[in-house]
Amino acid sequence: MLIVVADDLPKTALELLKAEGWEVDSKSGRSPEELSKDIAAADALVVRSATKVTPDIIAGGKKLKAIARAGTGVDNVNVGAATARGIVVMNAPGANSISVAELAMAQLLSMARKLPAADASMKQGKWDKKSFLGEEVRGKVLGLAGLGRIGQEVARRAQSFEMTVIAHDPFIASNIAAGLNIELVSLDELCARADYLSLHMPATPQTRHTFNAERLAKCKKGLKLINTARGELIDEPALVEAIKSGHIGGAALDVYTTEPTTDHTLQQLPQVVASPHIAASTKEGQELVGVETATALRDFLKTGVIRNAVNFPSIPAEEFQKIQPFVDLAKQLGSLVGQMGEARIEGLSVRYYGELASGTHPLIVNAALVGLFKAILHDETVTEVNARAVAKARGIELTESSSTRGRSFRSLISLKLMTSTGERYVEGTIVPGFGPRLVLLNGVPIDAELPGTTILFMNNDQPGVIGQIGTILGQNHINIANFALGRNESGAVCAANVDEPADKKIGEDVMKQIRALKPVKNAWLVRV
Image (tube, one colour):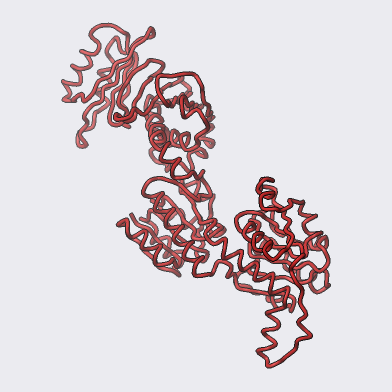
């Protein structure tokens, strides 16, 4: 396994990956061309904020399974291009929350007590007490635009200073805010009531320049603005004018539209406290971000557990351990139905029975699609990340459902593949001590092994069929490892698990001989 680390990571994070016996190529400052070359054989890429992961770079990583961003956002990673390639993109969303929250509070207090200006004055040899009359933050209203992890940490600290905290966040549950003793309000009300306003919003096309001239004009006169989130949230020229007019009392900024800054007009205003994007730059924060990123990446590459992914559902490791056997089962069932003849696929239905019926399981559906597509799309990279997008692009309708109908198994997965030539219907389960089993084939009960090479056939329920097929296999020197038979009023189905040496694959000529038998309705060679 090769891991390319393109930006600086703590030694502890690198050692965590090396401890798995993996090769770790750690070097910062690579050019895009150099990085594209270096990741050609890499299984994963780790970056911080300096490296831009463009579609061209992603295209160069032919074996990439994951891109890990050691930080909160993924602004420097083209998530769409990664998703299209089936690459998991993960970050460390909560690791630096404390560091960022503490800087936001430091900025708030710096503006309240004019500390940067007072310090600059003292360094010039002055003793000018009158120019630095400050204000207490006790009793003041702090508005939070965004009440995620960082916003909540800021709220806790502000409340310890006896500030009143209000917030605007359309995506936070009201009970979460109530538990923090925070009133949820509209953005307009937030701006109208707050004495200090701290931004903790994501940068999206919808949030760009949320704080423009019109919004700033609606703010309470004298408002002091704090931004440790994203520079794009603020229309900087508009903020300059609002500060110069006296309507906005000041600003404390750690992020900017362009970084490094090229226009210094805003940061040079005396009412502005400026820092060069250092909110997460603490020894503790950097260590924690690096270790959390490396841990999540290790777990994914080693066990398949996906945490902190921005383009795939993340589930707790304990839950993943419970459903992982069924994820593998779904992939095997998908592969099996995908090999049961060529036809135009129109839809895939996944249904759960038993204990699995308690909810929906996106990982299981995605795994079924991966198995299906790997059986029919040999030249296209399909993973759990992009499987649904591939299905949508091909016009394949997905249905996920559950049933409370009693079955003979604790948990059961049913796949129904709708094609231009009819339906293919299989069911499977996990039998303790025996592993994944095929328990239904096109409506006929059976109990057969799933993994390996299997010859499946449907036939009329009459004497001599198994003997004829055994004869054909024997004449072609094909050894039967296990044999399962099922039947009902519609006929019989058989599954012959066979030994298939790597240097002597079973050919289509064998299958033609089997299909030529008069009682055989259909036969398929499947490799799962």
